[in-house]
Length: 136
Image (tube, rainbow, N blue to C red; front, side):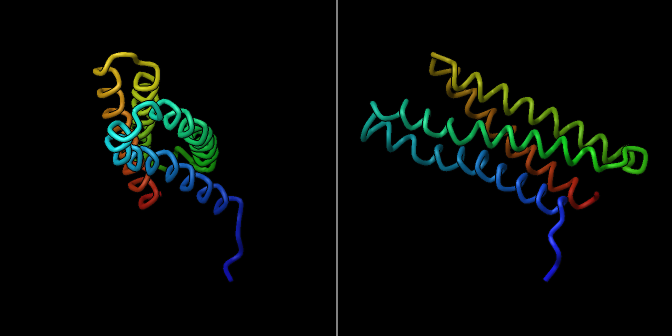
């Protein structure tokens, strides 16, 4: 068996948290239309329940991402790697900001636009992470 390391633990935690954050958004996008019709009064409770899982996952994402950056030698990483990393951080910021707008917004537009940009930012940040993993 391959020996586990702190690095493998960091990557595992990061990927599990990303799965919760991004996967949860995708699952909710599929469930919300049905909940809206079948039990609209349950929608706020469903959103709150997801938040109790999703936001701690985002904290794990940020923590393990910072931890991972700490093990990368920026001088050896190269310009393309660091540019991709910077874009990923921008996308994470967009995902977080849009999700906050979605969560706190009261208008249908804020909910819709915040949700769409939150998911899009999350998906693109995850893809940027894949690019970094294949180069780094």
